[in-house]
Image 1 (cartoon, rainbow, N blue to C red):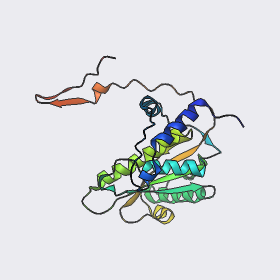
Image 2: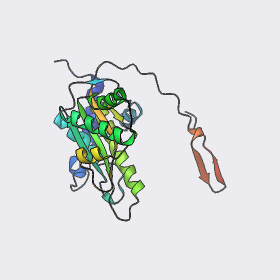
Image 3: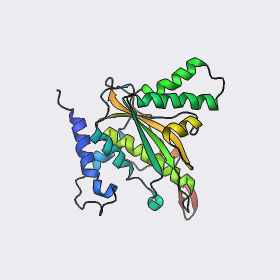
Image 4: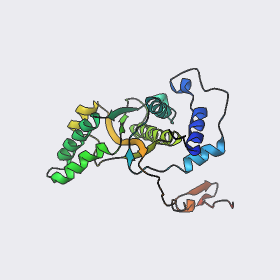
Length: 236
């Protein structure tokens, strides 16, 4: 067996020091010991990229558990945990693929058979799928805010996968509700599918081009006593 790459080992060590399982499970609180390397954590976030082709093996049960625990650390007004996950592996991917086909036929009648097959194939692009469900609770917290929390939970899973050296990519389809999805995912009132995360091993080393430079001034402004003004990035 080949030793794990240093970058993967570094990401795994970082995740181990930043996730407190007791706190995420409702324990007494986060540990006072902080082994976090802030620069490494920032590097982890800035360098995350969606994976391309994913093959076996998928994440181990322990890795998958860590990813799901990471979802419990996202901003969550009222601690409602307005999200739910459905894991599909093996033949379970086929059931999910069938549900996607039925949902597509319901929302887009007359879809060509070749497109329906492509819809089903979406369930087989990785060994493991985590279906993301926004589970909005009734009460004073606005539904949009709860859905935002559920979306953050999905991002946390993707980021944790990156930290563990597991390939991940978040996918979606043009519908979030359908009879077949309700039956296969057990969707209840106030619930909808907001996407699904593919998890597995990158089929090849990715040589992705760098992201285009982010011009913060294009979408950031500053509000001060005199009103709103353009944001100017500090000189580095």
